[in-house]
Length: 376
Image (cartoon, rainbow, N blue to C red):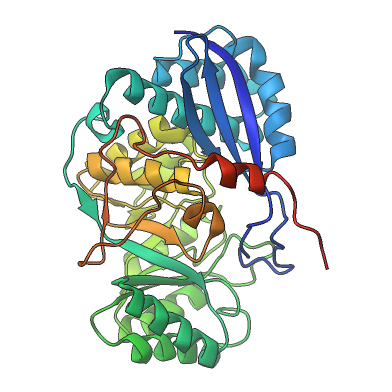
C-alpha cells in the first residue's frame, strides 16, 4: 500500500481563544487536518498544530520523500521525512506536518490490521482515563461560574491557564485560584498553567517559586509553564524547590529536544504535543524516556478531536500517563466526529476500541469548517 496524496483540510470558523495578548477569532487559521490517501483508496487522518498555508507549503517541500512511500510503516517513514530535511530546520513547520502525517499513518496501520492504535503501540495499561477540562482564567465571577458548570458536566479535573493569571499582581493571582477552589470544592483536581511561552514573558525563577508556594496552599496538582520555554536552568531549580509538581514541554519538538530536559530533571510531568512534536511516534518515545527517569507523561492537547483521539491511545499505552487534556468548549472537538467523546459516570473518557484511531469524521462538519466565518 503506497502513499499517493496528502490533503490538507483547513479548520476555520471554530478556533477558540488561546490566551495570547491579541486573542483569537473563530476564523483564525491555527489547526489543520491532514489526510493521507493511498493507492488502495484507504485513508488515514492526522492533526497539525499549524496553519493551513504552512501545512500546504510543507506538503510540497516533503513531497519527494513521501510520494509512493509505504503507508504501513509510520515510524520509518516519519523518521525518513525528518532525517531528509534537517537543513530546512529541525523543528517548526516541517516537524509539525511530519506529526500529522505520522498520526495519519498510524491510523492507516490500525485500519489495515483491524486493531485499535493503543494495542499496536504495545498494549493497554488502561481502558479509560480522566480528562482535565482546559480553560482560560477569567475575572473571578466569570471564572467561578465556568468551573461550577464544568463540575456539573462531570469533569473531575480542571486546568486554568494564561491571562489574566500572572499579568496583574500576585494578590490577584491568589484570588483567582482561591475563587476556583471554593467554587468546585476539594474533590475536583485543579491544575494551573501560567502560560510562560507567551511572547516576552516577564517573570523569572523567584516569581515562579513564590507562586508555586501559593498554589500549594490550594492543593493545586501542578504548575505548568511557569517560566519561558528555553529556561532549562530555571526549570531545574524550580522543580527541586517548588512544593507542587512542575510541568512543561509543550513547545518542544523532536525527542532529541526533550532529552536534556528529562535527563536533567527539569519536569515532574512532561507534556509533548503529538500534533507538533513529531507525532505519535515521537510522543511515545518521549513518554518512555520519561518513564525511565521516573517522570510522568501527560499529552498537551489544545487542538482537535483527532489530536484528542491520538492522546487517548497514547495514554492507554504508556504506564505513567495520568490525564488527557480536553479543551472545552471547542468546535473542533465537539463537532468533528460522528460520535463525539462523552464523559462516563466517573468523569473519564474511554479509549476508542475501533481500528486505528477508532473515530469517524463528520464530513459535513469538516466541509463547514473549510469556509471561514465572516467578521461582523
